[in-house]
Length: 112
Length: 118
Image (cartoon, rainbow over all chains, first blue to last red; front, side, top):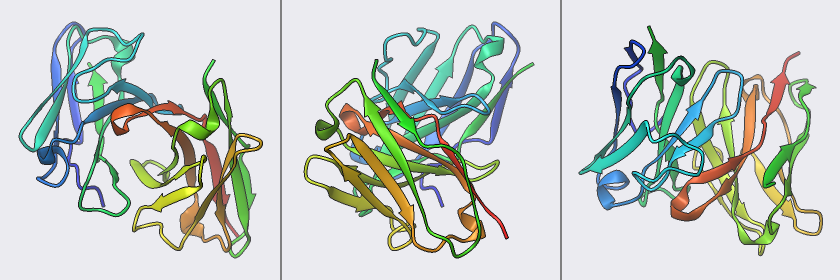
């Protein structure tokens, strides 16, 4: 049972901008813990997309951006492309838990 | 190249034991935490636990405490996830991951599919 809630799906036409949220609580995102985002193409392992709220690892296009505010975070994709169709997961650290890492419920992005 | 390479797919019967592996390449094994993530068929990611190979300090998600054992052999740069008695509900893809700075997971293994069926 995840403590980070994401919308099940978002969709957009090629070229459009889509956003997805990741809602937590005062023990994880609201405590100032970093939020990280992963992209998973079906049948493959997840890949780190954004770390520490808004930083992109080398090789990740700047079409992907992240932000955090209060107990929530969001991921935006601008200039949506066919290859962006995938599942996206947020992840953070929860200081209330003894096993402290938590993933979001995941959002399916569909390119129309 | 930094990689985590996992052992191959397994098909087991309920009640059997299993140990899957995750070998590092391209970085110092003892200086990064290694975690395990479960993904049941058609479902999301679940964090299971993590180990620091340098001193074998291990933490478990409450959901997996007592259900699995995480270990590491630093002499061969390999982490392990094991079950003493598998259940059908253990059927899933299991990923090993390297914990990067800021508690993100920057390197993922290719995954090991475990199928438990009578």
